[in-house]
Length: 221
Image (cartoon, rainbow, N blue to C red; front, top):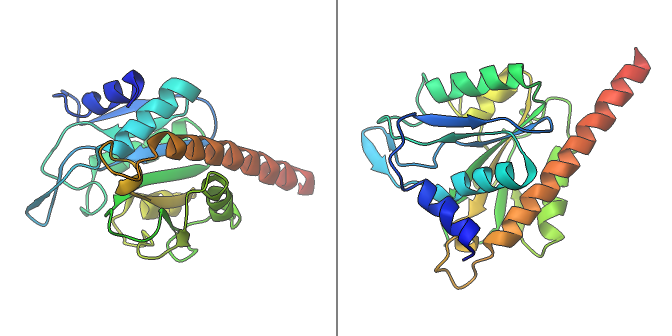
């Protein structure tokens, strides 16, 4: 583990006063990590998915990618509860920063066979960008990270998910479920830096896709 990655890991073990942290940046894709700290779902405490927060933090520090990360437990679950200050903040940021795509990061069990599941709400969350999942798939497969599945085992279609809320507000939203075995520093198949680079490539590809689609729309006006 590099010093940079170790610092990012320790960041999500610290006590933070604010429940979540927004960091501005460049581009029209917003990264989200609602489970970067422990959460409570239906009265049960669930483990943190700290590596999702680390990915957001490092991509902001390295590439100035805009992001929103959960930083303190409020006895809530921002990807499940009917009401969520985290989701409200995310939608406000999307409007303020002219966001077109939201990538909501989560972790899969290391026992799952896929490297990544791209949840699209069974296609309902893509908001005019049907090519978006393939941009993400190609970025991961180009680095030998596979297989990549679509809406299997998770589609992010629930009414109280971050991706559903973003899609309802007009964004293209995808719930990216990353296999924890690729992220954990003590896992035999750990490839954290490759995942980081794959996400960076996906963000570049999605920004290019948005620019192309916006240009095509303008030419039709």
